[in-house]
Image (cartoon, rainbow, N blue to C red; front, side):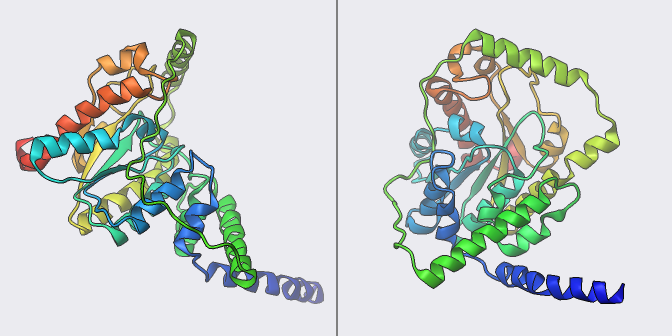
Length: 322
């Protein structure tokens, strides 16, 4: 038995050493962000260019999932804030497809390394996402991937594997060479437009799905376990903003059919920062939606005008007067 265990140990030792060596590498940020080229309208590549290559400042940063990407017309909001405040404010939407607080945390870390935002607007939906973002291990640093075991991360082993793949590919590039990566600093805004208009059947299905979901009450213990991973990273994001003298604001972007006028964790969000809640008419007007979960260009214009008006108050008034 001892001989067998020794043989197994000798077999596994090189593998463990190899994994440790790969995780000792933090790939170049440009390589990491460009590695997922084509994903989410190539948004990761644009985010890298806007954070690391552009010489333009970032005063207001929107961060969230595809709801942010499709709802926040950052160029329009920038224009309105400049008109209303007389300042030259720079606004960028870093909304990235699919929910996951861990990837938002990784992106925000890079923002604070390179820029000094005054406001970070964090998207909240009806509830916190339950899982790690599938692209997180491609953008995250080694220590953040290894440390993402926070109970309850359902994708921890998957994250480790993807992190290893990225580092192996980066090592190959370093050894064998690769065409030089070039960025693009001409695009300053990250809004993803669409002119599509949702069909009534999709809206109805979404509303019925939400009715079923809201009827199913989960035990408090199970719910606390489910959202712990997400809340861990949300706390890290708010702590990081506070450390950097940046104000957090939450933006509630719900689906068309949930009917939840406030997020389930509204009291928690409100205890941390302001929560911007859009007028109810935007959620009940079908012409504002491209599908059951995302605004089209008309809806995004309406939403962004409201967001700009809310942000103007925060630029010109102390927090206690809002």
